[in-house]
Image 1 (cartoon, protein in one colour):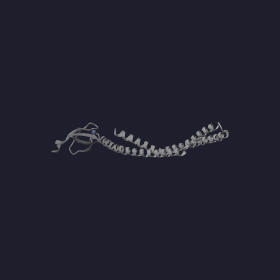
Image 2 (cartoon, helix red, strand yellow):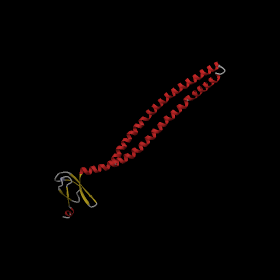
Image 3 (cartoon, helix red, strand yellow):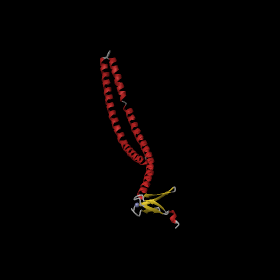
Image 4 (tube, helix red, strand yellow):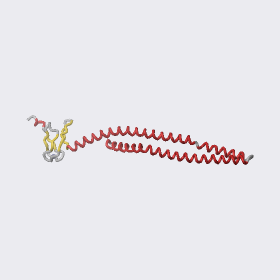
Length: 188
Ligand SMILES: [Zn+2]
């Protein structure tokens, strides 16, 4: 009975019954309670583990590895999306700057001010000329006022456009960040 030397007795991890384990046993069911056991041999020790526990441990390790990979992937995806977002945002900002430059309502305001000044100066010696310049001055001011109003409306539209164009990217980033947080929770 050569094998008999190596047989060891261990308690069932479920019911505590004494079980005899031979060296070739890896996996068996307890003869008393029927719970499946795995024989774990490491570093000269032998222990019994319930199959479900062993599976759970393997599952946990697998989940952790998967989560670590997901974190790396999600982090780089988020970085890409943030680049997309800032590119899209700066494209719209650029458009708004161009819009402001094109409108140039301030030059109308400057002409209105100059007209008012000329109106006051000419008032001393030529009333009619003063009135004519005054009318021009009022016209320039109205031109300024409406140019400014239309610029503000255009800028408001452009801001909404920017908001709409960047929203899908921001939503994607939010989703990715949520998944990143979930995966970080698995790893921690
Ligand atoms: Zn048992």
